[in-house]
Length: 545
Image (tube, rainbow, N blue to C red; front, top):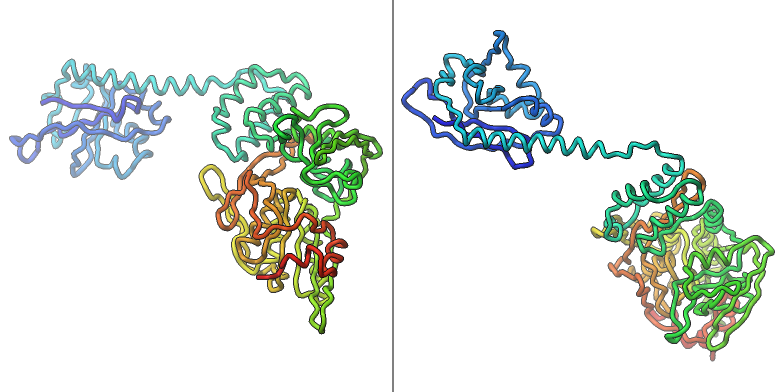
């Protein structure tokens, strides 16, 4: 009879199964038909071990007791041969006898017990079988060798301190970035190529290599921050910033000709606000440098500086071009202003409106909103107005905490990546403070980022009515990571959807009702407007629902 052998795939480890190669000991005249069987590929370590043998054979028919194989020295090799296989699959191997031999020496190597039959008398290795085994075995050895060569291609040179800083930045992007295709490139190959070709002889060159790496993602929100800029960003989220008090948006086109940077908002009381710069104005130049090709973060860095220094701005406000000379100062980012507004009416039940202006989402924001609500409630308010106009966002967790203040239950936001919903932020009402009073939310094109998360949550959960114009439309979330030398990375880690699964990126949150252009922008103007029966405030039914 003939012996058949095969392997799972051309690239798998060389395991050959001999099926039904012996006669039935009880009925010698009954012979079974040989079959070609496949064996699952073993792990690399076992493949390497198997490569040391010239041929590996196994019988697939179980017998009452295992076959014993004697070596040329008379000792049993069963344990030494079965050991690696038992580690792979004990329950499977218990049914097989294994031995190692080459076709040319098989008659000398194999000595089976009487019960198993006299194998050497019937085994014949034809030329075709030997060629088949040889090809399969060589392929298996080539797989092991190719893996070894691949592993050995680790750069042999010692990594410098600059290389390690670059790798630290690369690793953060690899772990945190939202797009796991990395803008359609092999992120691992980029690392290897950069270590070979990018100069990193000093810190400045290393920073340049990191910036070049981030530029390949084509994401304006994922950026590198030198140590002083990283420190400035952290201080901005903690309540103070030295500059002119402007939030800058995406580059925009003006009437299809000149380009510039759009103003999202001007901090109340800051230098830009006092100079009359408004949301929607366009900055054409900073210190006589055109902003036509300037990035938003480059512009932000130019606007910031030491306290008392000056910066020149060329601003397009409507049809008018203004040339302004502003002095940088420490802008206090007090996130909340509030006021009680009483609407005069006949009778004792005059409406008492609690107006809350939320200007930013720094680390004090949620606490300040709670304090404002408590103060207004002590004055027996019966409705609230939450003004998010010109609030360009801030800390994502603060946006979540403020949403919990107003909601008794429900989803706040869905966090998504390229594969779909990754996380859900919701509330069970345990942190709710004001869930019963009517609530109106005011938004405009300066409402962005965390402000849009809050506005979308209140709208989709039917907690508030939104008034104004479509918001800015920043539907991505960034996290800030500090590197070992004090620099940092701002990385886009996710996109988000509102509770109604609306992706607002580049679209914005759409309000329920518009506001008249003459609607006041601060707490004092709002209260005066409510007290005038003929004013725009009384023409808008803020609490109609």
